[in-house]
Image 1 (tube, rainbow, N blue to C red):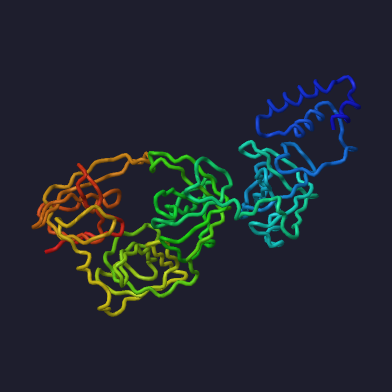
Image 2: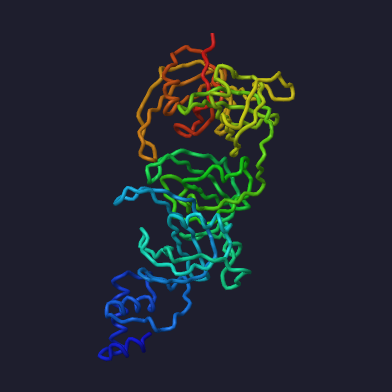
Amino acid sequence: MLETMLRQRPELSPEQIRDLIDEKKRKVGAGYLTDQGALFLVAADLGISFDNVPKVQAGLKDIYVGAKDVTVTGRIMNIYPVHTFTKRDSNEQAATRTIVVYDKDARVKVKLWDKQVNLPDEMGLQAGDIIKIIKGYVRSGLDGKPVINLGSYSAIETVRGDDPAIPSIDSLNSTIDTITGPQDSAVITGTISANPRLSEFVNARGEASKSLQMQVSNDAGTRTLRAVIWNVDETRLPKVFKTGAKVRMIGVKVKQGNPQYGNGDFEIHGDEGTILQFSNSQEDVEVMPLRIVSVGEETGRGSFLCLAADRAGRTFVLTVDNSLASSDQLSAGAMIECVPSRIFGNSVVLSKDDSYIRVTDDDASFPKLTKFEKKIKDIQVSQDPCIVEAIVLQVPETADVTTKMGETVPVTSTLLGDDTGEIRLVGWRNQSASVNKLSVGDRVRLAGVTTGAGREGKAELTLRPYSSVTRLS
């Protein structure tokens, strides 16, 4: 290529071209251009054509913004779902889809448009497949990094057999112990060490979405990292996965954690393209017999919360659709049978589409509610829910508290007592109102409360959305 440039522009010396290459790399930004990539841009500035120069097969590290007719080979790490949007200039509907590919040197996004978005499904592509991308063109992504786009003359071909020069996904696997710094497009395996949960949020496109949040630990349980998969597709999750299950996350980022929200260790973040592989998971949900411990509040989304226990005394938080049962039909101590839609750790979802619930006769093999009852002197800091009967000793006090997330919420507290001691009761957010309704001298039964460390490190009771407060006569 240098020889071609010198033939077409004999007034230039190799040293001058070298200077032009360095200047182009400085202007574009470090890390985005190889010398060859910069040479293409310099040639374009000088009006020099390489049409008659034999093309060299490039690796992913060699692509650069502005390149055309790019042909590269890579292994698929992630295939994102189709995203539709409205074009600003024409108000027309358009569709796009992203594939992440990698080789031994780099990882690059490949953008499919309109009719091409169905190619991964039509070709049966999946993570680990090696593909050849033919005649793509390169544009800058939102982060400034090069993205290969497929135009009308572009194509994707599958490569038969394996290429030992491109690392397998298994060979990229990291464990919780080996994470020492930020990473992109990482493959990480760990053990789910705390109850996973789904949370609702509004994503950057203004759409209602959900995130899967987990605590993932090493085998010894000595190191735990927070993991969040944003814009998660529930249909791609197993119906059942519990604490202790192994999970492999393919295509995630490792970021430095914020000490304000956790222990300051690294955090794992994924998105809708992240592949989750679970061990010890099952697709078929069996009938669950349970005893109701408490009936809590409405969620505001057509369902209400309950706390229930299985035969071994393990507790589960139930989200019950109002079409399956009402909160009046279920009462503390009642036996039920249910087929859940999903079980995430100790969170059980009963939706109207694929669940049922019915009240059954009492089963003596199940623990009675007395198993959860505690006197105040026996209460210790624990997330295990309990049942407490006590008398309200103080007028409830309410204060506005700013959380770590910057949210201002009401918090109401009061003092309870029984014949063994006294303890503080606290209600946050919606539960604040339940505490505020109490009066001095009320005898109450609290079901499904947990115990945390409060003032001066002393244990205090906390109402949960699944807790119930009953005045006793």
